[in-house]
Image (cartoon, rainbow, N blue to C red; front, side, top):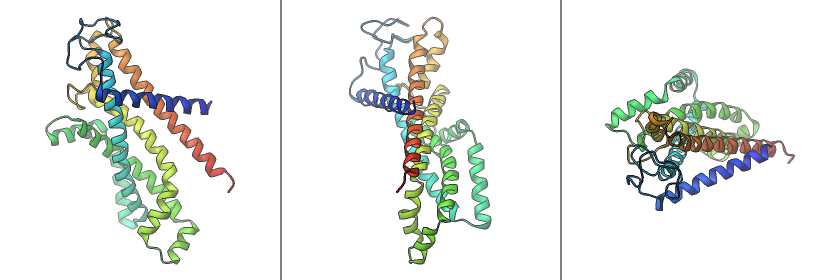
Length: 270
């Protein structure tokens, strides 16, 4: 069963990536083109119907896939870089610095992502895709940092670290050649799960008007625009909503599959 869900997750991610890449070069209709009647149902010209302005819904969902993957990957990379660096520093910290960093992690984790995004948008004077990635990445970095701190402390207490230190290896060399490779598998799974959460966070920010501005068609923005016509034209909500759920499920399936594979490799005899 787990192998099946892993393959389904890879398939879902592959399809979403293919649609996102395709939207860079081609969409059935221009995003801002009012090519059909308002709130029209599915047809040969508009497979997913049209929105309240007569724009093609499928074209907007295709572009939304690109935005979702961009934010998911971008926020995960940013949060991973910041969190790994701070987490490694915290693993070496002692006394008051250790307590200060631990308290800072707790504060950032408890800090609402949406509020942080509002502060970043206010500082940048406008909502944008980069501000959403920055806000989600910073919020995510505290979770990664705390995980890295715990994992790094366990690795640093092992005998081979002591042996490397006795052989004259510097701390930067120990971090790069011994510490990071040993925590990478667990960190990779955590980042995959955080990428799924980042996709949901981006949709939430766009729903509130804090994501990529028009004509970018974020799935959260599409859900907001279609909420007033959910009973008369349900496809406007169902299509982007189904795409959002499918992508998050695919990411979670892949993350679970990676965790099972890495656990099996760790338990295998050497």
